[in-house]
Image (cartoon, rainbow, N blue to C red):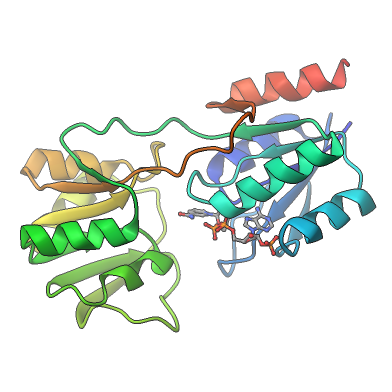
Length: 243
Ligand code: NAP
């Protein structure tokens, strides 16, 4: 059995490790970050070229199933895979880690709405963790931002007052607590990414009573099959092999 595993997450790497070598796994990465953590097994890197590109690619490289284990905010790739797999009749599963509970967070639908919220509430020292592409939405907000990202934001307007902190998770509660204190953070802006690797900032904010502005996840495409854990995804792949 051969599957295409759309990756870029720790869950995708864990799934590849669980399936390999009994199942032939071809992992696909977007190629956004230099020196990405690589899964075991075969890997391809780079976009497919939108819906038509992905359709062509799947025709030229037939697989028995596609598992989409991209990040919950990688909505374009997820929509593309859902559309093309449905069209071509390729079995398709989304593996999306469970969302964090909203708790007391101010829940918003987009980076733009998060920026409006920061401005409206008058937050002044903001820990911005929505990733390098999300920072542009805050360009006109009059506040100081600690922008944490894996790779430097490029070719985009950024808030006038900011410091960039380049780093990659996982993060520990004590370190997040120290960071919030050191920079006298008065608001945390985060996506609802879910998972344990980047959750400590939410717990640290709760500990210090720092308000959290949380960008909610984009919805999954209608009608897709989805699971929340690597175990369930392994079970689904095995069930496809028995068909
Ligand atoms: P996106 O907006 O859904 O994707 C933009 C384009 O990147 C897609 O249209 C596709 O290009 C290409 N792409 C995305 N994932 C791909 C994959 N696994 N293999 C091949 N091409 C892929 O996604 P994104 O938010 O930019 O995320 C890019 C990658 O980073 C994803 O693999 C995701 O798992 C990972 N990631 C994202 C986040 C996040 O917060 N968004 C966080 C951690 C990791 P074509 O249209 O040319 O096919």
